[in-house]
Length: 259
Image (cartoon, rainbow, N blue to C red; front, side, top):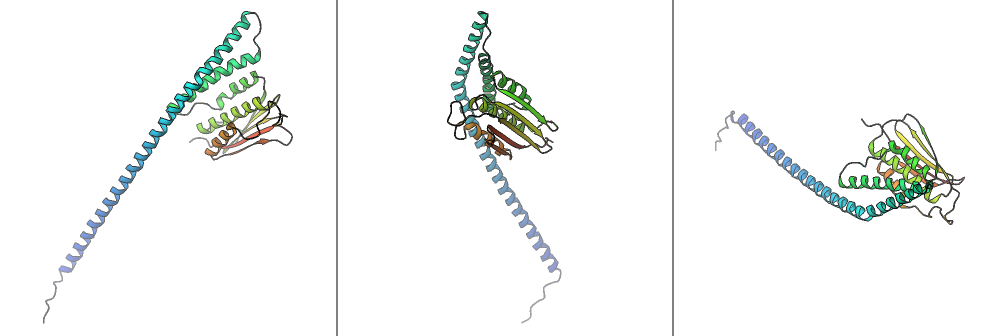
């Protein structure tokens, strides 16, 4: 039986048709993949937005709780301290330094609370940083604590989160000295390098954990907060007693200048 030969011109046509079909198939597959990716991206964005809404609602709830629980108490402290200072001045007496320190601390606490509430209600930073270090040290001295400050290295602008963390570490460390170290002296050292900011706060307190007005036997919430701040920035923190007595807080914070 004779089989007719296929005309040669059909071979190129067949290849062209096959290539066309393959191109259309690939294009349809690419469109399908793109559509799947877009759906996945929309799902991720929707999930992120839902998480942000949930977080914002929780922040607002915390802000309300802080406002309701602390604002009244701080206001009472301010009013009572102000009245006591006024009465002392009216009698021609000099107000005790401790009373003036309480008055200033109450005003500072009110400012801090307002700033914290503002942060909780927005997504911005709280605006605190090492630019406020002088006023922090002045308040500590007014409360009776002897504090020295040493800054070495080329002082320069820091990333906002590093600047805030450094200030909060010094603030918490000086607060702990005032509360737990008794009649102690504190030294604050800041050392700037191109890549790292070293923050160190030492005191020469001699108390033990068994005496009145001394350090608690375990890490408090302040030290836990310090570690969380430093860890979130990828830094390192040491906090503990010194061999010769006293206590040391030392933090190394990555501090590359912002681009």
